[in-house]
Image (cartoon, rainbow, N blue to C red; front, side, top):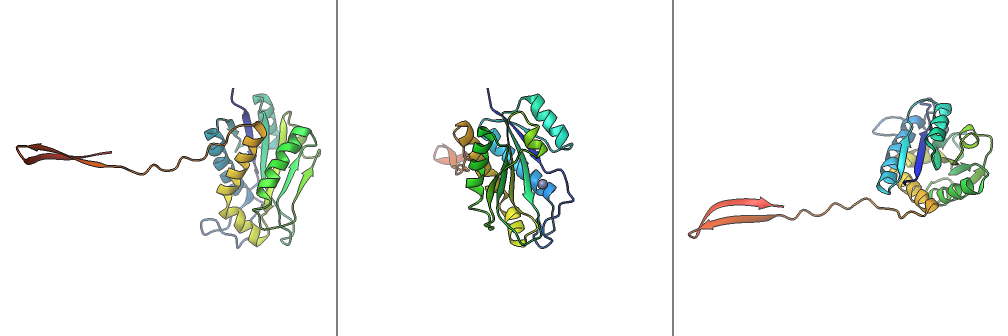
Amino acid sequence: MAYKIALSPEDRSSNAYHPQALYQGRSTNEHEQMCRCADLLEKELLRCGFAVKNMQYGNMYDRVAEGNGWGADLYIALHTNGFDGTVAGTRVHCYPSDKSRRIGKLIQDRIAPLSPGKSEKLVESSGLYELKATKMAAVLPEFGFHDNREEAQWLVDSMDDIARETAMAVCDFFGVTYVPEAEEAPAVTFEVRQVVNGEVVRTWVVR
Ligand SMILES: [Zn+2]
């Protein structure tokens, strides 16, 4: 049976990204970007054979209840960080259990070298509700600081990479082989001619 992954992207649109970090030519926020991340991550994980619950509704209490009820094997709360605009770097929070630490470190080790900021660390936390009330391994990555201009733009521009690297970390955690996106097969076409008595009576294209 497929491993079950519960995704809980930030629910508050009030966490604004740096106003000069633009997404599709306009300013953005943590809810919008983390829902993007959840959608990209869902696609990656489904391709690798996982079952996914992409919880873009309700608040953290609803989502924890749903993840627990579903019997998820891993709970990932997707976030970006905010402070005063001067700090940047990846900080993954994990519940202080062996399993949660392991997935936390796997994600931290893949994302931190990519994010521009260097204030990075794995943070053990037993106080965050989505880490302490979940029954399965639980992790809360803060992929970067969204109120730092450079890092906010990196977050917006790198969401594909962030989702892919996170999916690879999940694959490592469960010992599942990562399945990359299939490369577009080059189109091969043939032109076929039907010739009768030396005269072309019909041509068509075969793919
Ligand atoms: Zn958040």
